Image (cartoon, rainbow, N blue to C red):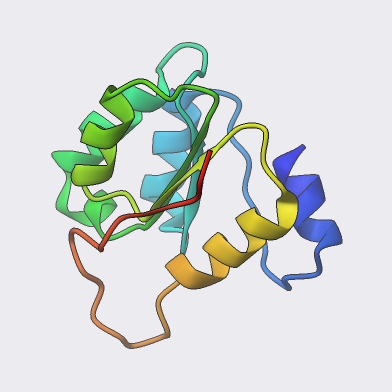
Length: 123
């Protein structure tokens, strides 16, 4: 649903989808996307596990991650400190997600910070 909405928003990006956390990690490793929109609640391998594996892999750390979740527990603050680009609570407006995608993608050739400054939107 997120990909379909972002396509309608005419951002002009190409997209890859993953049905679970394991597939997300595979896509991240094989395609090195410019940004990942990650839900914390996924089958097989959770979004939390994806974030842990990302933290241990120098190549994956370079990929900005936007976490979307209905979870507003204190653990989300820990994820923010772990270097995600942004947190967007569900339900969210697709325009807000589009703006975060644009803000998290670094210009070509620019150095990519390992731990970009976290951003969040009000709940």
